[in-house]
Image (tube, rainbow, N blue to C red; front, top):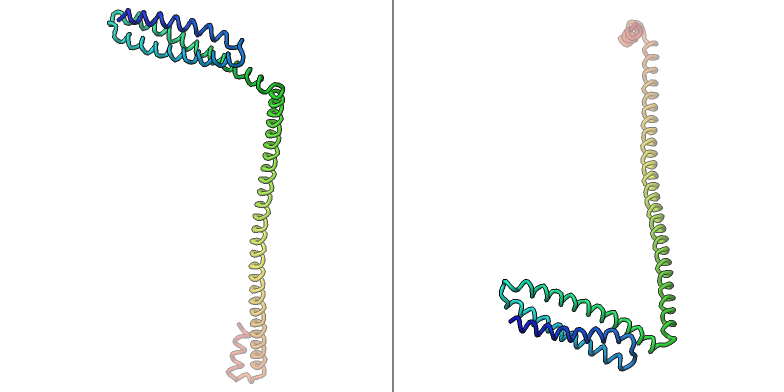
Length: 214
């Protein structure tokens, strides 16, 4: 089993060395040659992934007492693979930027300027929108305050009207009471005058004298 693992190791070393060399060449090429090289590297990376899978399977079949050493080597190969993928990604990004510049030429910088301008306009538009929203909220708050003030005013007017009616009713009752008192006073005065004009022996006059004494 270990011989198969070592065979995979040799293949891994050969392919990764080729990939490293090609990744370094990608930014220096252009056109179709660069495109083909990128595709070739991508294919070789897939081969390396398959090799790592085979190596992982082989390690699982190795006796436990020897497995730790092979696991350590496999781990280092996986780390090397991750580094190759990152380097290839950076190389492809540089490649994409260069292709874009080749295709667009002067239009590339013009497009970037337009993008910057659009971002500035968008920021300005968002700022204006935010200002309008704040103004709208202030107007709505002012309207709400005016509505509440109007409601309070209506309640005060209603209370004043109710109090006025109560005062008027109280005045009317007071006038009725004054009128009744005046009428009662006149009746008593008349009765007293009638009693005074009667003879002494008259029962009514006796009542008068009794009231007078009291």
